[in-house]
Image (spheres, rainbow, N blue to C red):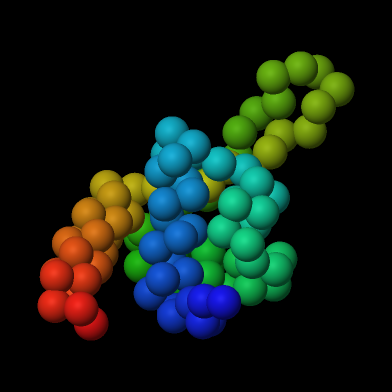
Length: 97
């Protein structure tokens, strides 16, 4: 069984889940994809918003009876984080760390 994920690995998993959905995802879907509780996801989203790695936009309803929904969008800064984290992981893996 794998150990617990570090804070950076959780952030990576959140951003990766958004990227894998084309850069935009509903918060509920993100919660399931990143395997986090609602409370924990909100804590991490708050931090990612502060650091400008993601933005949350209110999307208008496509049909009249539907409510508008929030969507989480990854920013260019978030994409840069993903690329750098991958490089760091490759570096540590190369040395067996």
